[in-house]
Length: 136
Image (tube, rainbow, N blue to C red):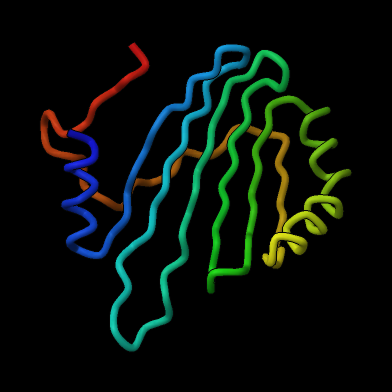
């Protein structure tokens, strides 16, 4: 049902897909892929990938990755654990090098030692029964 709902958005040119990835040896990761449909004569809309986990090892972490022009990557990270936020800042240049070796360019990298502010949803909720939660 979730795939069918995503297909409805794809017919409009929008991409909106969410999933939870369970791991046998680690805490689950929630992922959401979002891209608004492109309009003729307008710049291409970026792909946004949101990730969230409440890891026993790292604490609660949110990551928003925006990929523009198929190559520029802008990252924003929120981490409740100060050590995790500091470690991310410390390793920013290594991440930049890794992205460049993959043919991508780091645009911006922001790290906050705070919870992620509530994201405003700019798309209507899906129709009843069109979302399947597999976490149960």
